[in-house]
Picture: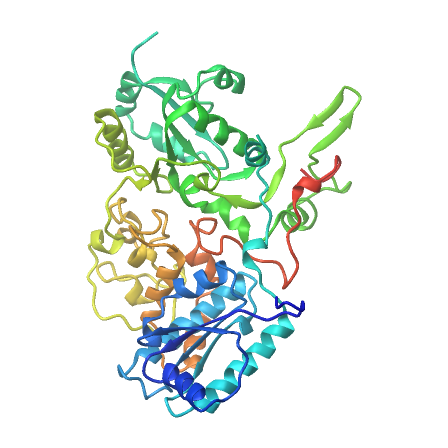
Length: 154
Length: 336
């Protein structure tokens, strides 16, 4: 939440070193405006993205995760982004079963030359998450152990 | 009184299979009885909770605790036995990772009670009776243990010294643990007692390059007896599951279910199985991937079959924004 009480999503971004992180750089050096909701983490390739990273981000309280890499066919490592596609689609199906909306974990492409596309993607995802509201995973359920509560109070 | 170390065994939310696994040591159970003074084992001998409460703190040398924690009674005994025991062992997959009871974390108490006591086709409950935490009868107030929305592992409730996974733990695993305890040759506290290789390492099936176009359910094909099951399209969690079982399931044509849980250093068991499964899909586009995955119903159930409460997300959320309410606000008459 921002100071004035409106919901500002926290989006964790996993950007590949060779395309999307450079697109983010280009957006910055070109002074393009986009919402300050993305916390970007540089990874060498979307093929390096362990689903554990995504789950950890959500578990720690992120409202969404945005994974961005090179366009299919343009991976610096030939096929890392194809590995990412397979993993992402399976992860999305898994997260649906956990009650997590598809919009909260997204995979998009932006080449090193596509600063505009990068900025627009962040803006669009931010709007989608604002419409969904906070995920707030750490507070989704209470501690139901009466004995733990007793010990904490004694 | 004997000088033998004192042993306690308890079952919380479990099926009883772990108890049978202990008895499955066969004649070696006599060694256990010879080596230990069994002070608490409700499954096979008569004890009362008051007997345990009367013991001195730390007076039990080893407690083998099986079962997940899903109600007030499970939690009460977990806290009580932790206080009375020097060494607490999470015995079996339910205590370690939540296991079958932990699958309840895909839903919640209200939905479960609605199905079990009202909607399931085999339910005959014309008066709509559901278990209550408190029930007033002429003799007074009857109380049932409060039933939780969220199943927990033992380690999420009390500190655990050692983990012995398996559904149930193999006799060889139990023997290894008992011997380690008797000889004092225990790994550092917090460790899983067992090997740190995966089921694939112990599986004798031949492994080649894996690329599959669809999955099969076990009833749909008769697998080749010598080739890796995953290569044949049968779901197998052996790629990311700790061994210790001797790859018993894959050897008889059934893919590994994942009961021994994550291997050393893995945070989220399901995420690692997911990664392994995704890597064998012979597809390039999201549409092709989806088409293959249409033959794999319930992926989350496969990936988190034994370790949902122990996973990073721990449970399913309700619809966006809707929280599961705290039971502390429960008044008398609320469901147990």
